[in-house]
Image 1 (spheres, rainbow over the protein chains, first blue to last red):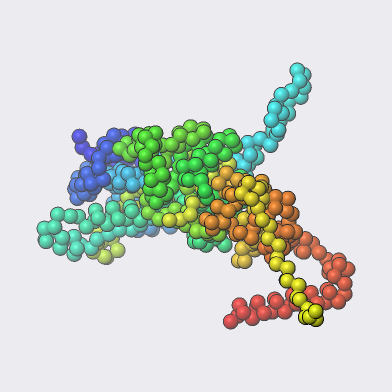
Image 2 (cartoon, rainbow over the protein chains, first blue to last red):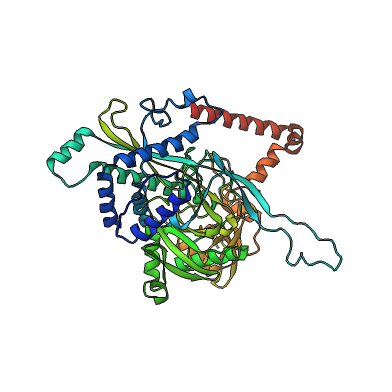
Length: 415
Length: 148
């Protein structure tokens, strides 16, 4: 079976989404990372046929053209971009959306960071995603909905705070000079420098997405890297550290998310404690995100317990993780590679800590614009008089935590 | 008999002693402290957080077994001087920590709401003058150090 999506479709086309899902989950994620890499190298080395190129050009024109053709923007102004594909003949550029490359890159990413696939995705509703963040489901006392036979029904309202999540544009340009491509070919080395560049570009995007998911701060300008709010980067998006934290002055202080410092309890007990508190608040915690060192420490704690070592689940095809039983159900333990969870000074103990997030995954969303995937754009070679082949890989994502009181964190002394 | 006078031994500061089973009150390290840069409190007065399974409200936990508090001290999570008898009140916490009895945000709003007339009435004319003088000195020395 060919490991390639034939033709290029609009990223919102259900047919493309179905094909892509099939390729990622049924074909690619069942392979090892090395096998995926090999398949990627083969695909990227193979030039598109004239027919495929023409089809990709048409779709690119339609997608980018659709975005350019707004009533507020004059055509002439909008179509001057180097990335413009909306012109006809030789007047426009010939940038291509390379949908055939994306599933490989995506699969390599998801194998490293399965939480990306485990957290639900949804389309954003604007330049920033506006949403209602629930801070309390009902302020009334227990049993207050019971009324007499002809009593007046009382109306109650959930307590919300209106939030906006920035949708970050994450992009990296990658390219290789003609000279290097020719030299590698002449030297006979069996590798493709462009493919290596693209795969490395993907690592950068993946790292930054994870970084913002965990430690991102785009709304609190006083935040620093060593504080719970995180380093302020206006073009990113707010992450779990700040949203589930307790930083006064942020949009999230007083949102009733849970914070527990781990002291004499072990990690397993601490996670279960936070999960039970979330359940008390009405949530159904089912997901734990933590650093690799925290996962290793949990494995050491529970390594001799068969109920832990044998209790695994496949979160995405080919990726299996441990689960632990908490009061309100099973918790999938997903470790995140790298240092993106980061450390900071605990506001309560002043120790350097890292977070372990306990989440009700039905209340956490990754919000996207343009397409729910990474997009690979092929830039026409030599277009700006530079002799190189270049690609841009980009995506647009933000994060919504719809009910912080159904989320929590364990602060663990960083090791 | 010698006329030598014997100095009365200086009274050591009273440190409460507890048995392991005793229940005590424990403070977060950052009780009523605030971030110098943002002027925001580390722990809000209404904030509920947990250390292990113990609930802290506004940075104070009560009914904590002393044995547990001792272990937290050992782990560096709290300071030994932040363990108090279970019924200790904010004035005792303030004395031990050198911080204000009122939470920083409460104190800030109280001071902000104070009119000069009221301040003079409370402090007395001389006291108000002294306070204003020290405040101005502090502000100008801060400005000077910022310029350097």
